[in-house]
Length: 124
Image 1 (tube, one colour):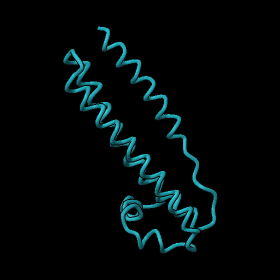
Image 2 (tube, helix red, strand yellow):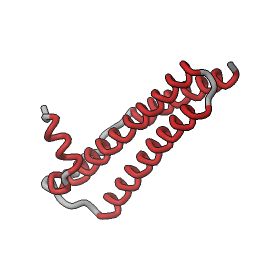
Image 3 (spheres, helix red, strand yellow):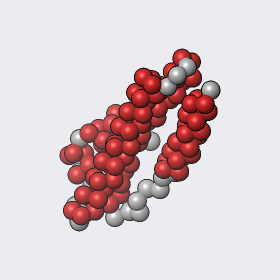
Image 4 (cartoon, helix red, strand yellow):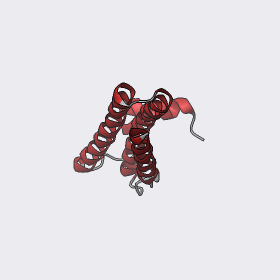
């Protein structure tokens, strides 16, 4: 079992990532980084959507619930992005299969439910 400190260190310490396995083809590392940046853009879009909802959606209680949910989801996506980047980089260095992830599907469902909630809030 990996300790929480070791996991966080793996996220932020480049030497920790480079300490295992062999250096992969740089194109794969760059592709992994582009994927990481795409997830961060998604996180920023969710946070920005939360700000828009907090400022412009009518109704106090529902507006707060949706805005806070978008903020939390944006934070979760950002943390998931760095975790997936580190796990993928480690797998490439060790010549292992890339780690599977259900997160994109789960995120798509959450966004769809959120879109329906926004639709209902807009018409109420």
